[in-house]
Image 1 (spheres, rainbow, N blue to C red):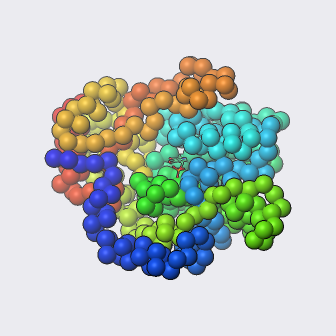
Image 2: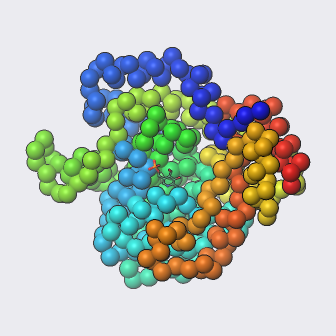
Length: 364
Ligand SMILES: Cc1ncc(COP(=O)(O)O)c(C=O)c1O
């Protein structure tokens, strides 16, 4: 038995002809930067997320950083976020010139504690950056209310949440800008690094288009200091094909999660779904006190697992300069030692799900 966390090989085998054709189309066009492949994916993805604009970028990390800058975050500002996220969330804040202010999560969902956000808003707060961990949206309705009341920006890290909705609306309809990653293992993944920002604000979209392309207004005319953060046409072509399947893939992920819930029953604690949300199960997370032993036993049984994430960002050496200590975010810290992500992707078979669930039950 060999069940990977995400079976990219099987996905490739199911679509090899189509994606080879897309790659060859771009290669033979010799249009390797920008152009119609990028624009057509951007239109398709904006529509998929129920929004007006998508700006394709070189990575999700760029998406977080540039979304914050386009939303008005400036050096010296503070941005409130969570600590149980991938380091890129925090890098985005820091590279935008701002200071990360970490708040804890709620024990049931491991998503941002909205009361803690409210308490953390201060004079320097410029934005709130919730992270939709494992494809489960944070409480966007309450977050938007708080941001509006304080005149600060709501920017979302939706790297893991392509296609998720909250309160019956696409997540991108909340706040100023929503950042996505198209890292290969994401629900919508490129064949390398890629990302994008979705927004309903034309001025924000225009700013992002300028920032990603060296701040230029013409071929050799630059009116601000920008970046080289463009989405490559090769990736755009593959993403444009993949996005046509994304709704069905997300449905399959929900069905897989439903099967896991049914088969695991009460044998382990499953991280709760968010109320009012349609989640997209980028990961399927359980919580077990003897997590490391279970992970080893599953590996021995041929089941790959992941930990998202083992060290909370506020305790990473890279971010030590911000003055956080062990004990500052107790819910986050406790969860980091207990969470485990089980294999999930659109290609996993019912037999594989049953085997994983059986191994979890046998080893807890
Ligand atoms: C929550 C979160 N934010 C940001 C990123 C950064 O995205 P990328 O790897 O595309 O730069 C990722 C994924 O890698 C992520 O999971």
